[in-house]
Length: 287
Image (cartoon, rainbow, N blue to C red):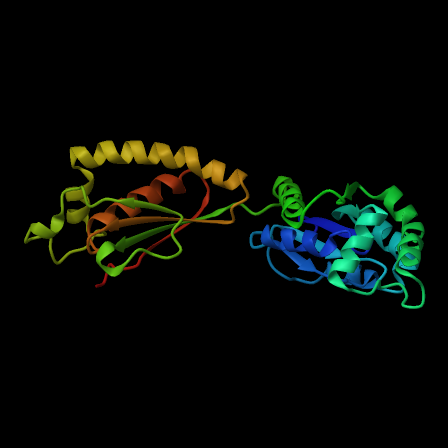
């Protein structure tokens, strides 16, 4: 796991740590909430998934664990010496905001039920001041809504060097069987000449060389493919920059057997050359 970026999320209760780890999870990170700090080194040795499948690791650690304060420094120093790339992210908020958030959620502060809420907030702040000092990043979430905080964390996650590249899936389909519900981009190629009306091609499909030649060597098809490939070359990096994990490009013709299959195969070969993570399937080729 030493090639994976690790985020340690900590800070004051009510500061938005649950929102932060949810954003990391949405960005493809393997996440654990309330991770016992003493178990961190052992956890990092586990073969969870390959680095191609996850973007990184994110752990929430805080005063809910009674041994956190006494053990975090030695544990963090140890994993840093062992070459792990990790960042401590400390979340905080102003006292009045924390009071308001606890009032809205009606949650008890994790420190004590014997003291008042404001006393617990101040005690926690004092106990964590040394950790805040050594943290790599301090975020004050007082003026951020849940959605704004998620956007900030998502941006941090996506700029991490270990974020998994976006997966692109090329899908051919037939309009007569319905539009695929997981489509992000849809292109209708029913304007192209249809091999179905050629008796010698009707029973073949778009993976057959004869059908491929009929569709792809058409002058109109060549013009379309040039323009559409240029569009995809422009769009795909922008979708990836935006933090999208999956992009499904659906290509449809009438029955999903001839034109869409041939075009999908051509697009797949073009994008494959750029080194992106790509797959292809033909939903209706056998109908």
